[in-house]
Image (cartoon, rainbow, N blue to C red):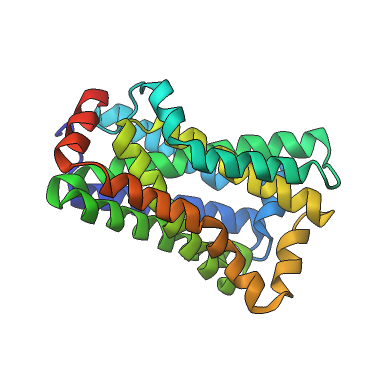
Length: 263
C-alpha cells in the first residue's frame, strides 16, 4: 500500500465515510430531526463511528502525508485572525441571549469538535492529497471545497429538509475554500480541525441562545423569506474571500514546500 492514497481510493474512502455519517445520522434522527436537536442531545453516533473508521484505515494502511503533523501554531493563529474574529463575535452574541444548560453546552462543544476533526480528516486530509498530486493547487483547492460543500446536501436525509441542506451545502463550499487554504498554508490539518470545530460550536451556541430553544434560530430563519435563506451565504462570504486571497497570494512552490515540511 502506498503511503499516499491514490485518488480513486481516496474517493472510495470518503464515500464510505460519508455513508456511515449519513446513515448513522438518519438512524439516530429518524430522518426528521433538526441538526441542533441532535448536536445537543448526546453523541452523534454516525459522526463518531465515521471518524473511528478513518482512524482505523489510516493506522492500518499507515497512510502518511495527510497533514496530521504539528504545525507552527504561531503562524497558524496569525492566519486564522479573520474567522477567529467571527467566532468571538458569535460567542459574544450567544451570551446576550438565554444560555443553555451546562450539559447541552458540553454536548454541543464535543460534537462540534468531533465533526470538525472527522470532516477535515476526510476532505482536507485523505482527499486533498491525491487531488494536489493530479491537479494544480488552485484546482485541487476548489474541487475539495465543492465536494466538501455539496456533501452537506445529504444532510437532508437526516433532517428531512433538503432546502435548508442545499443552503448549508453552498455555505459549506464557501467556508471550505478557507479551510483548504489554511490546510495548504500551514501544512497541517490540526489548526483547521480546531477552527472548524470552534466555528460549528459558535454557530450552534448562538442559534440555541438567541433562539431560546433548540432549533429556534433555524426555525425562525425558515419563516424569514429570501433574506433568511441568503443569510448563511452572506455570513461565510468573508471566509470565502479570505480563503481565495490566501491561495492567490501564495505561489504553488511555496504551498508544496510548506505541505512537505509538515507532512
